[in-house]
Amino acid sequence: MKIISVDSQKRKYKVVIGKGLLGKLGQFVKGIFHPRARVMIVFQTGVSVYARSAASSLKRNGYTVYFHKVLDGEKAKSQANLFRLLRDLLAKGFERTDGILAIGGGVVSDLSGFAASVYLRGIPYVNVATTLLAQVDSSIGGKTGINLPEGKNMMGSFYPPALVISDMDVLKSLPERELRASLAEVVKYGVIRDPGLFSFLESNTSKILNKNPAALERIVTDSARIKAEVVSRDEFETRGERIILNYGHTFGHGIENAARYKKIVHGEAVAIGMAMAAHLAAELGICSPGLVKRQMDLLKTFGLPVSVDALKINATTSFQAMMRDKKKAHGQLRFVLPVRIGEVVIRAGISAGEIRNILRLFGAK
Image 1 (cartoon, one colour):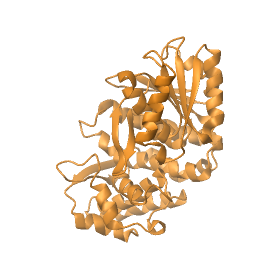
Image 2: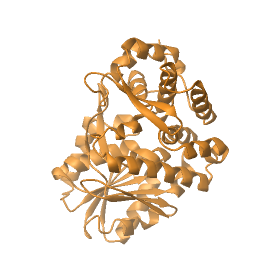
Image 3: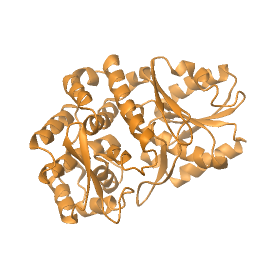
C-alpha cells in the first residue's frame, strides 16, 4: 500500500493506493465521518457491485448508508442532477457531521464534490476511484463541477476530498476502451513532468494494456504523485503552475463540446488535444518534430485517436467552445506546449487563424 499526501488550504488529505482497499473502507473513513454518520454513496450503474461492497464495509463499522444512483456519462454533470442529489441529502436528513462517498470515475467525483461543497455550506466527501482516469487524475486536486450547455465544468468549486482511495483490484474489470482513454492522462503526466514515466509507458505498453497489476500500480502512483505535487503548490491556479495539468485539454474540451459529448470520451479528446498541441509547438519552433512523432507513436500504440476525422465536427464550433475556456487570460487562450519530454511552457497570443488551421489539419471541417 502506498500513501501520497496532498496539501490543501482547506484540509490536508491522503491518496491511498493498493489492493483490497474497498473491503476496508469503513476503517479508512474513521476520523473523517462522525462515528454515527449517515453516508450517501453516489455511484453510476457500472459500479453497483463496488457500491454494495463499500456499503457493507461502512455498515460493519457503524455507519448508516444510503444510495444515490446517477446517470452514466457526462450528462450526469448537469444542474438538474446536482439539485436532485442535494434534495436527496435534504430528504434523508443529512447534517454537517454526515458525508458523501463518491464511487466511480471523474463524473461522479465532480458531481459529488460540488454537492458536498454547497450542501449546508460544506460536508465531507471521500473519493473511491474505480477508473484508471480517476485514479491518476480526476479524483485528486479538489476541482468539482458540472457542465453547462455552453461548456464543460463551467460551474463548480475548489473543494478537496477528505480522502482518496485507489484500489488496484477494481481495474481488473475496466472495459478496454475506458482503459485506453485513461492512458491519455498518464501520457500527459510523462510529457509535462516525468520523462522516466514516459519511457516506462513506451517500454511497457503490452503489460499496461493487459492490465499487469505491477505496471498499473506504477503508473497510478507516479501520476498521482505528480498531480499531488502540482496541486499542493498551486491549489487555486494562482501561481501559474497548475495550468500545466491542462496539457491537451484546451483543444480537447473544444472537441468534446463540438461533438456534444457523443462518439468520444474525455481521454480520447485529450489524446487528440495533445497531438494538436505538440504539432502547434513544433510549428512555433518550441519543440522538435521528433517529440511530435514520439508522442504520436505512443498515443497510437495505446489505440487512442489522434484526429477528429470520425467525429465530423466543425472547426468554427470547436474554436468557439475553446474560447469559453476557464483558463483564458485577458481574452486570450493559453496553451500548454511541450519543449521536450518532461518540460512544457505556457503560450498565449496564438492567432485565431492558427488555431483553426490546427483544427482543420486534424480533420475538423
